[in-house]
Length: 224
Image (cartoon, rainbow, N blue to C red):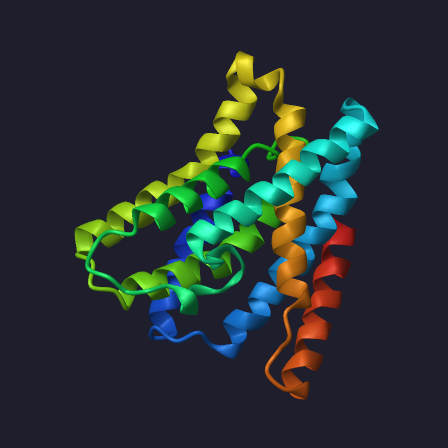
């Protein structure tokens, strides 16, 4: 049951943080984003990548990982990089952001596929989604959208990851190809995590703090 509930809790926590921080992207949110990137990358390398290589040929695995990287680049072109903290590039408009909404839902749906009862990827997704939910909520609160539109956006976005997990575990037609999808998701995670980690911080002090939380994220992932 945690595989379905934890991603939902992550969105709830992210929304609460957005309200508490009063619509501002705080240093704490940036550091949490760095921690999530390191944690997600480490779990992908420690857990998900070996699992996929055990089930697929090496060449096929590499091909689908590369496809996932390219797919994420396309999704980020549509979402303007919200998946790794670039909500400041979004333009506030009165029209509902369908392109952003659809691209984020696709990303969220796919990241639910590697979550199984026997692995720890749910924790990587959990930590990753908290700062992302915070940034998305911050953007929505600063927009001119109605409360119904904001609630609908967050509600559907919240359901996407559990839906992906349900499909990958219960739809027979999909379960036969889930390893291929997981390889694609590895590419998505690798691109997102490395983008977060390699972005330059604001000043030496922040970079030192970022380095500490990155090391801490890798350490915690290694303990799981």
